[in-house]
Image (cartoon, rainbow, N blue to C red; front, side, top):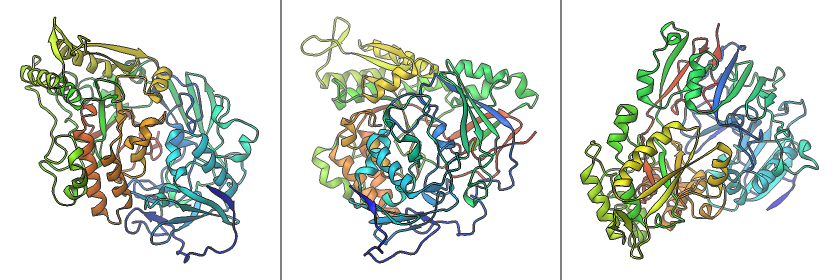
Length: 592
């Protein structure tokens, strides 16, 4: 890595400065766009809302590995060089940067900062702040920032407000990712250990909100900066409209729901279709004080379920993993807990054009997988579908199949317990956060079926801080896992299931998968020069992940559901990604 200041013209042919960039083709919005298509440029400013989280927090720095942080902070207090338009699969437009330059091969990218960009304390955002932020986050920050840093060959100041990244890896997405890292203020951290920040070391950002007050573990108050530098920027027009956002913390989701019913919380997201249909008829809904809003989307299902840690036996055997997936009586559990209203996740990218297709792999997908044919698990090339139960509590056929798979893996029933050849019983623990009550309900029903096989399972309930610490060090047998995926998957896939991530603490590769074929598909995805090539690589990756049997999948969330006070309004145009942490509350407003 080379850091420096170079004011001489680059030796490469200079690209034309642009107002935005897309992964493939040109960005949809023109340079003079008024606002993002899913924003209301005339939205009024004002009002205060209260949101609710479960658990607690012991840090207000979302950019380091240490601590439990209110997840909303990353979306409200800091900004990046470019901002994402959620109405396109993957396109960025100038935010802190006024322009972006890239060559045809995207081997480098250059940004020019806006002269008016300011931190919340009024100081200018400088190239020095940008360089410091990338180096610090890449070496001391959260694990999510490490991969990009390792692929930057040089990082240079090329003008008073210009900075150039040159990459050491062939990866078309890097030019976009370089525009998406949070920019922090270098001066704030002079003489301090960034990675060891305490709860009182609140990072200064350039975003619309600042942390104005907090009570450790209980609440955080965010106030809209009246001097916010980007208020009139077209990309920001109609966003961040509430004067104040308070985030209160509660013991579990049931308590949050009661607080919402009592008027102490302004909005909640409901992920259970049965509860949405049957438990939202309380007086404040009937009077119109509470509005139920459903939000459609086009994004992939992602993966939600119980992930198995393949770093530990017996989860290193795919037959055991398939047996445990088969034992999970989805049809019965789904009917019991959601009224059967939510469809099952069928693959990591299901519900989107990126999903693996039924049956054997064909065309470009088959060509990508062919070099690895001798090492792939059954079903990757020939086709794989999740096992289905008969929907009854007993699920006899499913249990018989599970027993057969376990016997193939060397496990047999002895004295009513499933044991290996040495007589050791098959036992494991499911790690769960104590405030996530639905996960416990799912686990309890799952355990009943596992006990019928003679498998002893225990639930280990821990608080949020312990859960995060153990998840970061992969200290679990099985645990709840939720990984959202986008319509333009890219470099984050290394962090999710790349081989290197399996051996680094703090990554999202909870299953511990180390598979050369997966690494090759991620590489193919990142080096594809067309949308069609990227889709083929993603479909091949989807086959490898799904047939890898790493997660016991639950149901997918095909519709977003937000219950909110009637004073909270949102634009009529919904982004293709639907609801998400960067839609509500960012694009909503208060109207008495």
